[in-house]
Image (tube, rainbow, N blue to C red; front, side, top):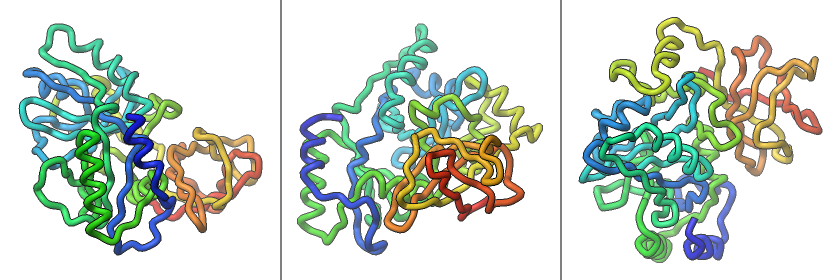
Length: 309
């Protein structure tokens, strides 16, 4: 992230929770970056690399997708935005920009495609309770009607941010508060610790509309399709909570309370809130006893399932 933009944001007092669900909230999504894919062959290239159908993309209507390795394991989930003039923005975890760019570069060969990490040039604002309009740089946040993204250069973002807080009563929130909303809506973000661990269906990306089963071949497609048509996926992603004061590593396993040696799954996302910590967890199978789960951390904090497909 650009240091000037980071200093501008850090100078504000940003809350880790959304205090008023009816107020306009603004967040600088510093943990996300922008990988720009451009060129006359960009659409065809991405169609052969990603799970979503690039040909169905519409400008200002972002799509959730995934980029997999040859074994069908998800390297990164992302939000893709179609821009004019054969330009696409891939929004993904900042720490995965470099490895994703490197892997994609290997497949370009002679195609007219350029990959540029725009994370230093473009900033991402998340807006909650913002009235979506068709102005430049504003994009709907997937299929939600209360959230959107503002993506622009640093000066434009700073001016937009300043105008909003001068003209509106707003809550300034942190990325932690935004990710709480992602967890509650089941949107998974992978990072350098969880990359290449899961087939997309393990993260409900099929249910979130991030996988097209009609578009044809792409990297990892054979495994993804087999998982879909043969019903091979037994893993399940669930939303859960644990103690607000619980501390654990980013890739914390989940065990049985009755036997801590039995590994049942792992945490892929977390957001510490005032009353609890929200979790997205992936289990090897749907638990028969949802009251028998705990984190494999020092205090063996109990996990409570709050949402299940």
